[in-house]
Image (cartoon, rainbow, N blue to C red; front, top):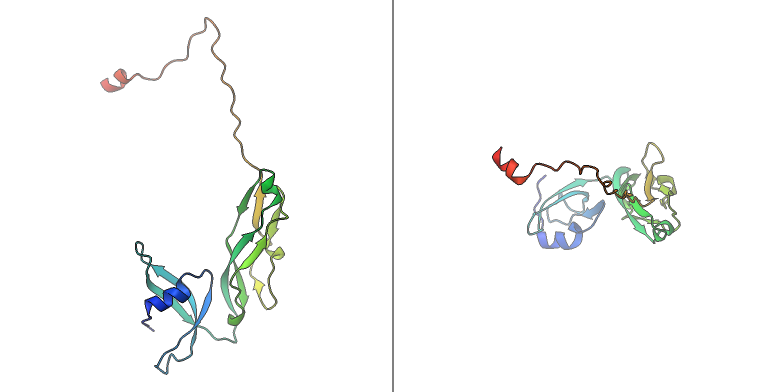
Length: 176
């Protein structure tokens, strides 16, 4: 069903939010009055940033659904203090829950992570009534050791040894 929404109201209330959110439609049309919908996608104009299209899906408040919930990494990992690099592997996870139980986001405390350690899906603070959907207990964030490329000092040619061949000169390149 095609709907026309007030862009300013919609933008100020919903468009800037991350993750999956429910909206209750207020309309004088009886077919839409007090319907609850899930905001699935919001398309923005590439230059102005204005909302140009959004996908809303009506939901049954008594049936579970699957949605993506963003992860917020909080704290400073001990491994980062020692020179490691915090490497988020995923920025959101898929969960199943009733529409009214959809979490806005999950805070993932990384302060206890050392170099080489990870936080996995089963370690996340998931509230009751919400279950993460995953096939294996994959890592969501890790602290990796810093990668430093070692440079080998180049030895100068020995006395009397021929210098390495020079690349084609500009003049030779211009002739071909």
